Length: 218
Image 1 (cartoon, rainbow, N blue to C red):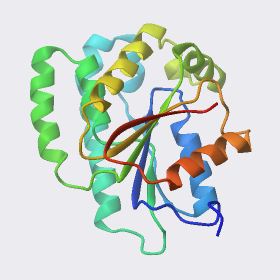
Image 2 (cartoon, one colour; image 1 turned 135 degrees about the vertical axis):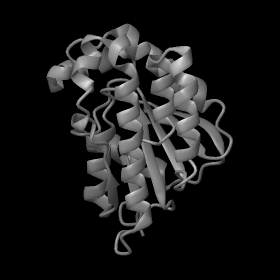
Image 3 (cartoon, helix red, strand yellow; image 1 turned 30 degrees about the vertical axis):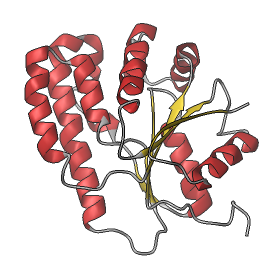
C-alpha cells in the first residue's frame, strides 16, 4: 500500500509556524487527501485584532485573552465529541501557541496573570501526537502575507515576525513530551507543487522520536 493511500500513524497532528507560513493551506490539503477532521483557528472572529495591529500595547491583553478562550473552547468541543468516522485530527495550531504569543506581546505583569489562566485551561484536552513546525525566512513570510492581502495584516513588520519565530524556536527546543519536526521550506510552494506536498505527506507517515528533529526540503 502506498503512503498516499494510508492514513497517518497519529491521532492528532498540529501544524504550526509563523504568520503567513501556510499552516491552514496545508491543513486543507491534508483533509482533502485523507478525509481527516480539521480544527482551524478562527482568527478573524477576534474583535480586538484590527486595533491590536494599530495599537499593540493597548490591545495586547484582550486580543490574547480572546484567542486563548476561543482556542480552548474549540479544542474542548472537538475532543469532547470526536467524530468516529474520521481517521485522525489535523489542527493549524497547538494550544501552547497561546502562551508564546502572549509572552511576546504582554507586559511582565500581564503575562504572569495570563500564564496562570493558561495553566488551568491547558490541562483539559490532549496534546498533539506530532507537531510539524513549518519554517520560512522572514522575507518569504512578508511576501506571502502581502500576496494574500488581508487588511488587518498590512502593518505586520519583519521585526515582529522575527520575534515570533524566535519565541517558537526557543520553546520547541525545550519540548520533551511530543515529537516535533521543524521543516525548513524556504519558498517551496506545497499548495501548487505536488512534489513539495508529497514530501510533507511522507514526512508525516514516518515515525518520529520525542523531542525535536530537523528536516529541509531540498
